[in-house]
Length: 340
Ligand SMILES: NC(=O)c1ccc[n+]([C@@H]2O[C@H](COP(=O)([O-])OP(=O)(O)OC[C@H]3O[C@@H](n4cnc5c(N)ncnc54)[C@H](OP(=O)(O)O)[C@@H]3O)[C@@H](O)[C@H]2O)c1
Image (cartoon, rainbow, N blue to C red; front, side, top):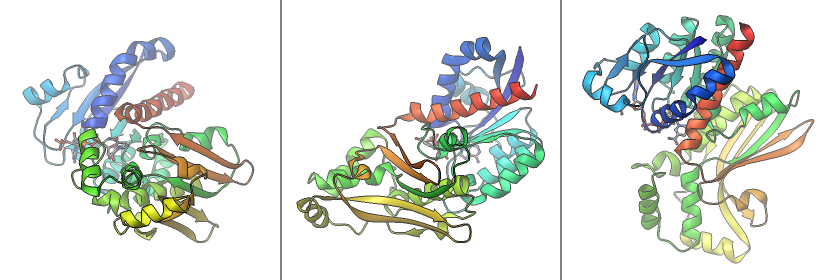
């Protein structure tokens, strides 16, 4: 039986859901792959850090953090640079304007020849080429499926199944908060009421401005363009307009004409210029993307060999986020098993 030692940076909603999935699947992973997963470090921002080469019991992380969590400055970076692990899991909060400190966490891992998995899209939106190069040079595996649409396979779909296809365009609805809000406004629900209900259900942030102004969608589009088209762009280069200027009257008028307003993402790259836009758009209500409802998301990938392929994530919960990180963990294990 081989060990796979993991260091988890960030143990919030995604980290906890991942921990619980690992607990459920640990025995199956041992049976199927002959690999025992051992979490040797968990870092948080303000709730302390656990480092234990013998492995942390994932059934009691909150209690362990409270009892013996060490308070460290820059805990994520400290763990990435010093703990004993094979793979780093980057689950710290997104900084949409810089991608930091997550970029530095992953660089520290690659600098030590360690593998990395990120659910945080900052590094993919701001530093994908550099990180990819570092991972290749260091012989490290690097996975990031969760950064767009949770565990829905988009990056894996292209790399594993659409072999030798060039991606020529990306269209999608990538932000659940704005999709939900536009739909509620169309039903006549007042903006503040829709926001409050979204907060109550847990998918609208206390400060929703990054969603409403289109930044979150821009970061996801950038990640898609960087990985699928090698566009080498950053979120600030996306031509961006949010939904904050859209009135209930405009939405009602669109409905009278058989249309819906959606916050659409579009990316194109001709090998020279990368063009990405996030904009409210009027869609005929029979169009596929017009039917994406509530907190669901969808992305259409246009390719040279396989035409257009669309994948939809229906009403995701935190378990689908955890699955994204889990599926990357399995790819890592499969990669390691192949090498050995
Ligand atoms: N939640 C989702 O549905 C979802 C879906 C896809 C992708 N993601 C991405 O996954 C990541 C985690 O999301 P989440 O929902 O779990 O966030 P969250 O609930 O806010 O948890 C973030 C965790 O990171 C810790 N942290 C903050 N700064 C840190 C640092 N410098 N070093 C180490 N740990 C640090 C926090 O600790 P303290 O609480 O002590 O500050 C907390 O444990 C984000 O990048 C997010 O964009 C989330």
